Length: 165
Image 1: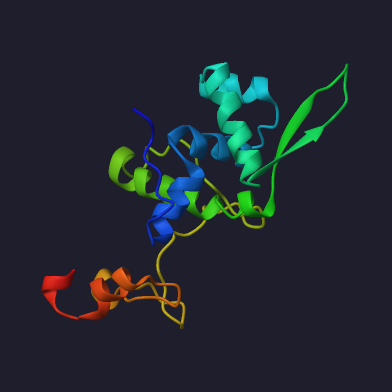
Image 2 (image 1 turned 90 degrees about the horizontal axis):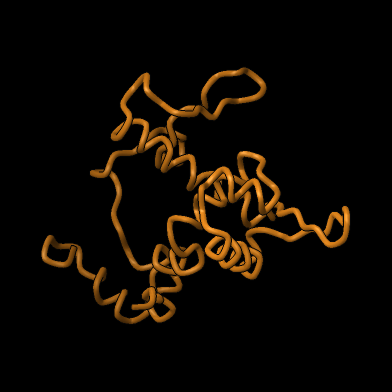
């Protein structure tokens, strides 16, 4: 059974998942954020099979999340570097890391920390913030159709009562 595609779904989360694919893809991006550049290092650090790694790296290059750079040492040899599009995924990776540190590992048991190089302090918890920069709770947010909403999305979120959510 093949992986479900979301190309026809009018949803930014679904479209992101269609681009990023499976868990290996985000782990490869995490490794790239950690500084991993070579196929052999990705393979060793992740414990991933060569064929799966090759497919995921190819997809990340095709999606312009990574770029393949020929370093030309001893024949053809490539390094992989994050593009601006790939580097933007640090927020996604950090959000997942913070969620796991809170709900899976627990305070004081975090496997890695992301720190501000200027201060050495861990970066503050990510949060949805209002215009003044204050954290917001779920009771302060609503979901509504955006400018790119399909008619079905507009119908789904057009009403503001409990039966439509």
